[in-house]
Image (cartoon, rainbow, N blue to C red; front, side, top):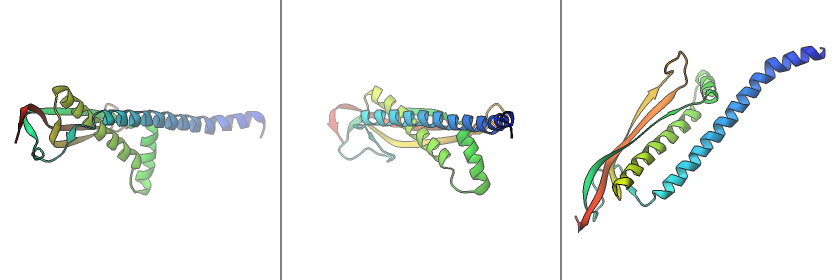
Length: 163
C-alpha cells in the first residue's frame, strides 16, 4: 500500500469513528453536567416533603391545596440511539434510554417542586407521573424523545393550626 491508499483508508474508517467518539464524549459531558445540576437543585429543595400518599402526614398544619406541575421533554443523542439500535438486535436492557428516562423524571419532579416552593408549600402529596414516548418526530428515523409530566397537590400552610 502506498501512502495515498493508507490516507484513503484512514479517512474512510477513521473519520466516522472520530465523529462517533466525539459525539459520545460530548453527549456524556452534557449528561453529566445535567446530573450535577439536578443534584444541586435537589439539595436546595431537600426540606420539602414529597410523597405519593393521598393525604398529608399526621400532625401536618392545616393547608390550602394547589395543583402543581412540572414537565420536560428530553431527547436522546445520536450515539445513544445508535447503541440502542445495536442492543435491539441482540436484546436486553437499553441502559442509555433508562438513564434518559431517569433524568427526565428527576427534572419533571424538580420543576414541580420548584413551582410548589414558589407558592410557599412545605409538602407536596399525591405525586403522579405521566410519560409519553415521542419517536422520530418530524423526520423518518428521527431521534427518540420522552415527555414526562409530574403533578401533585402542594400544601401551603395556613396559620399555626394543625389537624
